[in-house]
Every structure is written in C-alpha cells, then in structure tokens.
Image (tube, rainbow, N blue to C red; front, side, top):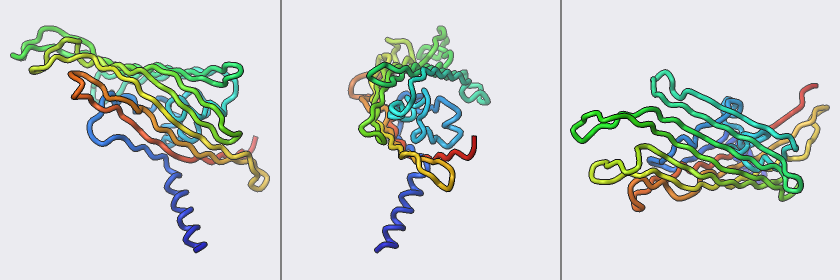
Length: 243
C-alpha cells in the first residue's frame, strides 16, 4: 500500500510540475486574451501561475499579489504579432500594481490588440473604403491571504471587440460590436522557507481559472461566441544558491 501511495504522489507531482492550460474546445471569441504578456514567464514554460511575483501576476495568478511587497510596479509590452506573415497585427499590454494601506496590492491592466486595416467591399466585391479592427480589455485584480501560506485572488475585465463597423450588413444579418465581462479565480500556496543543506528554499503551488463569463455577441443573443476560458495550474521550486 505504501508503494502505491508513493507512486500516486510521484505521478501527481510530475503531472502538476508542468504548467497546464486547458481552453474551451471549439472556436472562441477574443483569443488575444490568451497571449502571454511577459517574456519572462512565457520563456520559463508559462510558469507564472506558480511564481506570480510581479505586476504580471494579474495575468498569471492574481493571488500572487497577496505575497508581494508594497513596491509599485508597471509593466509594458509591445509586440508586432506574427511579423513574418505580414499580418499587420500589433499587441499592446500595460499592467501595474499598487499597494493600498490596510488592503494590500491591487493590479490593473489595459490590453489592446490592433487587427490592422481592412478593406470594405459590397456584395459585388467592389471596394468602397477601409476600416480598422481592434479588440481591447481592461480590468482590475486583487489578492488576499487566507492564511500566512495560502492566498486567493480574483479579478474582472471588460472586453470589447470591434471587428467591423457597427451596422455593417453581413449576408442577411447586421453585425454589431461585441462586449462582455470576464472573471478570474485563482489560488497560490507558498511554503515557509526551509533548509536544504545550507541553502534556503521554498515550494509554490498555484492555479488560475480566467476569463469566465458570457460569450461575445456580434449578431444576436442566440449566437454568442464563448470567451477563451483557461485553467492553469503549476508548481515552482526556488532555492538561493549564493548571494
């Protein structure tokens, strides 16, 4: 029985060791919400869900704000998206966190995805002009401690999508600009520092369920496209090797 328990624990440890992202199956609206805004966590295999130690915790795991100090931070990201394909797509992300005495750290963000210039045509494929398409999201997040080692986080964002000018007739339907509200729920557990040899270390476990909400409505209420709801979970291990 002991060997079975050890095997199950080992399998669970290895499974959670890799950051997992599970999105809704099928087509979702506003997929730009899944773009990782900071190269640090993306470059470490999306491990931000268990690290969450700076302003980008708003994206990865808002519960991380509960363990951060009172330092105010701002993060800015600008990226020409898929430039090798000449897509005319540009991604912008502005995030920040600020400490409020007696309450803790709050985070806020603005995400803007420029979809470039589009050509407007008639049903006879005659060009009549151009227009720009874009999508944006803005919201706030907050993390709070349940115990000294475990915290929960939450947040919400307003999402707006302008694919075509409002009132544009597509086939037999009239298109409109889409909007929705997305919510996040996250948790983060951090052990107290412990010694391995003469080195201090700690272990973190985190999860984040993001972009939960009603789908985007572009035509009518019966044809809503779902938000890209994503569940992430992972662990991190930190050790101070030297000064």
